[in-house]
Image 1 (cartoon, helix red, strand yellow):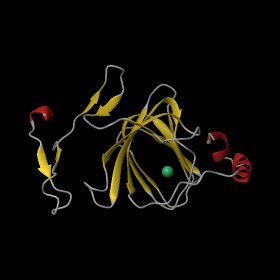
Image 2 (cartoon, rainbow, N blue to C red; image 1 turned 30 degrees about the horizontal axis):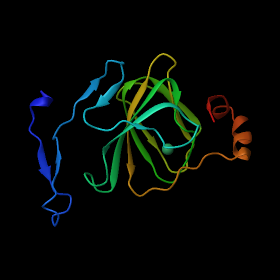
Image 3 (cartoon, rainbow, N blue to C red; image 1 turned 90 degrees about the vertical axis):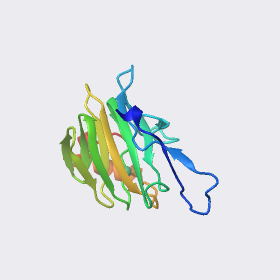
Length: 173
Ligand code: MN
């Protein structure tokens, strides 16, 4: 039924009435022929523009700060066997698992993740998401538009974290 909806125009800035942005009211989330899930009409981006500390992730920005002031909602899909960057930062993540399975490290705890689980990552907690070996992990992630840059562990951090009974065996850096 999504395709029958009529697009509407909105003005991000009321003084800019001559250049309305046309957006569909509803976007469908559908499976591609390759078996991935994507949101209609939203560019599929690399997870991050540079770096080698993650594997097999795509990113779609669903709501940027213009549509939803102050926050961005992104959709990430980690392919089976893939993982996000091991990192920490002051800003928080609110994550909703939409499809697949996997595990997450948050702080010093590992959580099994399934569809519709919610994950909250508090400030300055080390975190990393792993897709299962045989299933992808697709999730929404809400962040503030104004946020600090993620910190990756230093060589000293890595050496110390390797000896941690929970984190050591989980982290991929
Ligand atoms: Mn993060």
